Image (cartoon, rainbow, N blue to C red; front, side, top):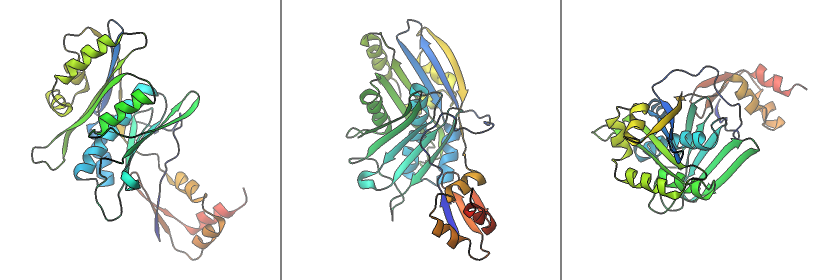
Length: 306
């Protein structure tokens, strides 16, 4: 017997891994000396690779997936650094979706739900972007439609401007292998945010500066996939103060207890049926694909009065 479990609860303040691993993936934050804007840079290469491998994503889906994972990290850092953020890109007509799940300790994972009979989740007219983030007052939820002809970055920028009323420039991208097999050499992005009370002028100057810069992929290549070097590229000769940095890594929250908790939500009749015989229920986590073997005696325990 086999099945799957999706630990996909709404964002909560304390959903995080026990001991974050050390990777080269970083988030670096800086503030302009005149307090007009702040810059957040994220390098997510190893994180994206881990999520892509777990979901067996390929082609354009893998690229959009990598960009969405980076975007979720940037939105979390911009809007809810101490809370969980989930970003869901839904295909037109409900045909497939991409999920990016970013946690306050840097643990980031994702999910690819493919349309029936198709390997790719397409990005184009009819898509929608759902953002759920935790906050001091509870959970915030917003849905936007990506602009026509835009990509993940444009969809996220529209979300920040229309739903959060944050004037920002956001960019995400990948530096791919020359053979075009979507083997990511580097992955990352940045947010430039106008601070409250500042005039739009400084952001316009920064926007023009960014427009003249190479793509995110080229910037990542020039920076060697290093977050500090990417920040230096963006703020070259501009006075600023580095505010700090933190780790980002691919991981998961699943464990046997979470699997049993998911099974406990099934109707009692279904649980009784699963306990018949000595078969082992094999369940795989949708996020990391780790397998769990649940014995009938464990299922019987779920039926006992609490």
